Length: 124
Image 1: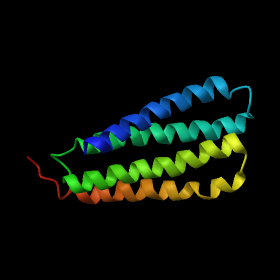
Image 2: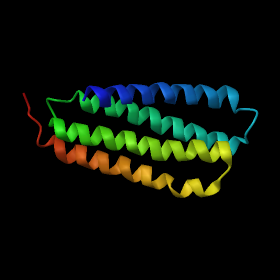
Image 3: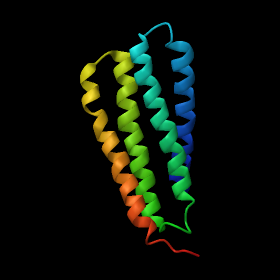
Image 4: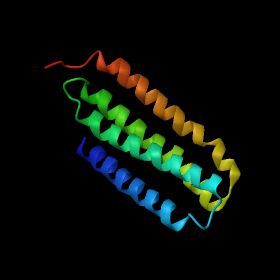
């Protein structure tokens, strides 16, 4: 759990750095439509980094194995979703957009597992 939490914190740091890079380094380099894609990637990375950290600490609501699974799906989803969008903007390789939904599906599955797993929490 500590390693997953550390990875989540690292994902947050990368998300903040990518946000700053987009705002300052890409602003005059890519078209506004590409900057919107970049910002969407940053948004999802930050939301799911925080969510991953929170679920790992929800031990009164969610069993540990559920929290671990959800956090890993959030992190994997971030890697695929945000990562593919970052690469798409930086390389202009358009087919990368086709794998982005795999990351989105990972987010959705994680949220559903969390919703179902919460009902099996320890409720101390």
